Image 1 (cartoon, one colour):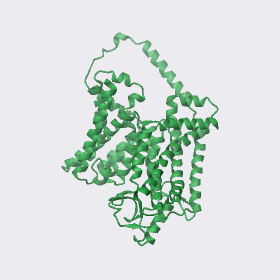
Image 2: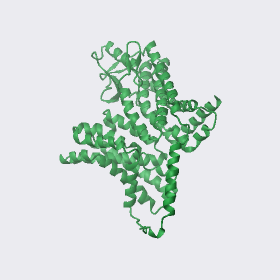
Image 3: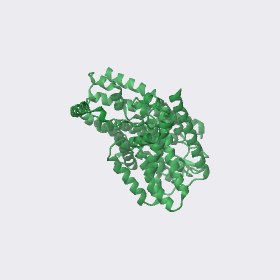
Image 4: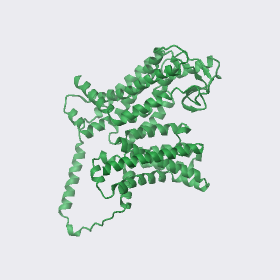
Length: 515
């Protein structure tokens, strides 16, 4: 037990001290402040037919718990995923493998450290929700139980499930990081869209907390504020939270069936760890893999020993950027498994045949998100593979390496959007063509800059997933590729932001190379 606690404690400390976690924590707190809009705000996060609740403890506690359950589960997976891979690459895993710590103990320690990371963010959001209660001060008394109950019964079990899911995905697809990222994206959409089991006794809803949703709708209908059968909208909705359109919500009455369903969710999660334990190889290298490597090395040695050096062609020196651009582009294209290009080609075909509005708003962002594994290491792969000093000492590294990385990523993203660009070009809609290209440049800019600032890929994966999910759900404020109508100010702000971020990224890379 002492060894298990030590692993959890040290792993937790290492991860919360990382730059990406601190940025994510600050970002989560800032987003949490928007969960409860200002009274005069033109948007809402939870509403029934456009009506929202009065800002009492029950409403603020339930709304922030629901929003945290959904959004933190959504991007929390990308924040905590990769714990086993980190131990493998750093050598810590091999050390732990030599100790008496069993496979289940090790995997469960990773689950608990993952959960503690997410729980730390929940504590920050919880504190922010109480601050918002006092900040808006609608004249209602503070009932701390109305804050604790929804977080304890809705948010915490959902985050524990995500913590287990991250470990399960790592064990099942340890060499396929792209499958983990993309697989969770579609799994989350499937699980959050409906309850797995919905009966009068037990409701097995992982993220949404259906019991709270139903009682919010019932409170709105009982007050006579909205028509019957009005649905609950969870998420950022513009022009829905208008001032004066309010009803009183006095809190969620959690039934025994719902409490049992949350305990079952935690139990099923633990059983999932038990089931994958035999599949965990405890950082052992495959014997077959070593045999193949030895055979390959033997063949290479034999071929080198019989090679005549005078028969080799004389290398030609080329200080241009085209050879490096070709190499960078091939690195992007060849990263990940080849069969994943079937998904990409499917997306390209859908861009060509689906109606323009659907292709632009839904297919394009998802297709670009499928490239998250390729472009997330755009500017950090040198540090990841420990070749950055060699790379930065090359001839004109700033011009030949950095610029070609950006250009190669742009070529990839724009190439995937070619069918959509051609359809707009045939309509002479050059503004839409420019917006799509601007969207590609936005994604590349964020991948490039965040990779330089964090020296990793986690933060970009988290933000890219969050922005993609929001865009698919029609939140126009985060539209970066022109799928929804905007005034010119929106695009001016986006362009200025891109220029500012690119300037910061290039300056930081210049200091790394020449300082």
